[in-house]
Length: 433
Image (cartoon, rainbow, N blue to C red; front, top):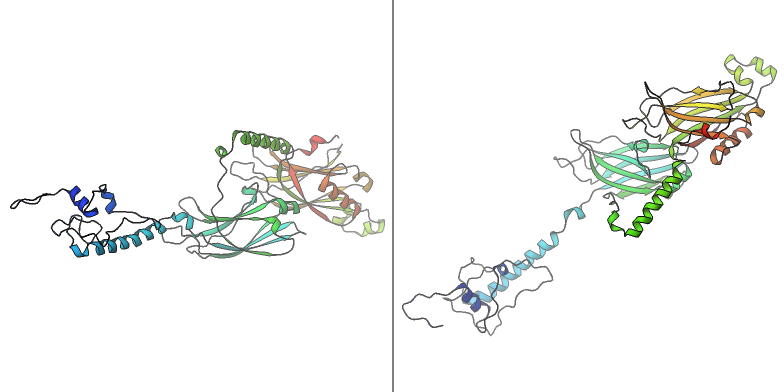
């Protein structure tokens, strides 16, 4: 390129670029984005000028965005390579830190830890969960704190009937509860097949409560009558399986198995638990019966005492998510229709305590031919009551109900308590009077 005297030098940005990149053969022109690279730690930079390459004259020196000047600022000849190397190395360290710290923050969020104890008492069929404390919970409120509480559910079948909840501790990320929550009517079969979900939530008075984290513990890890301590990290709830992730064949098989299980369990759907106490009083001698008190004279003649203690995890029958349960007992066949007894109604609960006893005056020989029907109902004002569940005990029963009946007849004068599973099948529908 020839420049005449007296004329100003006119040179395009493309020529500046060509001179900067290589004084010899012109290489492809850089894009403007090359001056603002976002390089990963494993990427390499452009080749720097080799030592044998002479720098361009100062008057023709091209602008360099990555150097100390502005976008079109000149650069001294001797400092071209050093400035380029120094600025690129500084940009390299900056881009590396951005790449490392640019990961999704939700994946690395610590939700906190939770400490609690589990104890299963085999004698009383109860599961005790002592919620101790939590540490380092995730802030949920504008003040950087939270109002945490813990709630428990039994899986499968989480509902209001098996929901337990601690008190709320205000304005803290390290709450201490030291509160014991108890599930009644937990059998050894439940301990083998059920899972306890422990959730930590933040209570908000004006809006809905917010979920912080949870943990799930298989109850088979807890040995009977031994306290097991847990100190676990809270986790996000597991994602629900997507139907689209399965192939058509697997989806068809899954639907078929689900329908088959529903059909098999429909006739024996679990509707809650009932704690019954049976005690047979043998007839007392004539002298002892005469000396007995007035309130014990009836039992002195001999008969069956049925104690309705409590229910647990009942099915909700009302729109508010609760029931108004009461219990009815029959000793069938009942020709004279005089064996009906009924407890009081307890309002708005799924875990009622009755602690009522009913006495049937009957001889031991007659009792062997009878069947005790116990049904739980939901009281509704102004319309028919809803059937919740029932159970039958007699010589024609099966499983735990038969064993309870036999133990009562064998152990005369002793109280025999058992938990029984309520089903949606009305006991009287399978018995012939």
